[in-house]
Length: 358
Ligand code: PMP
Picture 1 (cartoon, rainbow, N blue to C red):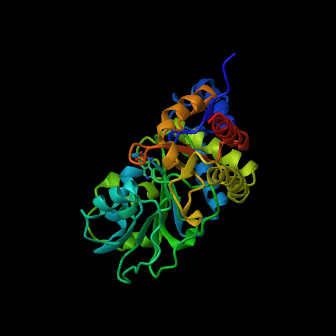
Picture 2 (cartoon, rainbow, N blue to C red):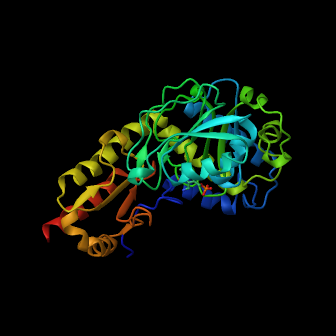
Picture 3 (cartoon, helix red, strand yellow):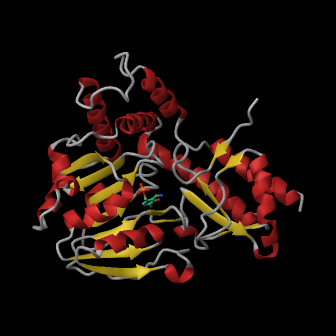
């Protein structure tokens, strides 16, 4: 018998059983076609229905207002680092630098004009969210990375600013309600809360696309994909199918509102243990800044030599993917939507067992 594994990987990461089962079935017989979802034309009525339903469920679950387009593209969130400024930044944009992903987004935006970095938490290895900053009123948008997958901070409430927001929500989309109307664009690689890598979700305000007059190459132009319903070129058919399954699962679970309740409980359980257990400390000191999706922690100063022991101990007990990112060290437990409460409890018990023996 194989031991139960608790999957704490940061991405690609845990998916609902429902998504895996339905995708496995469709890999053999998709929509009673007798063909694999990998073998049918993206223009077949069966696949077109998948794409449309996925887009509609995104609208429904995130309460996307009129005037926005929902796209499933490729190239990952990393391609959006440049598609966003290419399509939405006329001369100036503003960015909040809260980690490596924000830094990468800033680097790409600089190809297109004047980028104001309004604040950065680099001075403390990104372990907090900067709060006092001013966004220039003439910026076309203010870019935030809502969840910092690596450093474990999360912007849970849209900042109150005078310009539209652009949000990289790769690692916390669908984990809580958001106010889409505050954004000109939202993007997310699928491989955390949605599906396998290969699909990238983009929600863009149509009106915001009239701002720039630079020529935009066809594939990099949101308009191309909007006009063709994400079918300008061959979409990532199997990943989009899997995303649809997760969206259906999410709806069944009470949508993002239901998910937020569970996510608060899961993160609360682990942070409470980190605040209690003498062996560990969370890397983000301010509870308000802590991510519900990626909980980062290290050994307490007196116990640093136990890091490898704990990793081995936890691995023996079935914990997978808890080694921290190399730029933070220590540990990272990713608690995405599909992560059951029981797995978080199992990790907490492992931490308590380990503490007892020290
Ligand atoms: N932004 C964030 C917040 C991420 O966590 C990641 C990937 N982990 C990326 C961007 C890059 O995404 P991709 O690998 O899909 O390009």
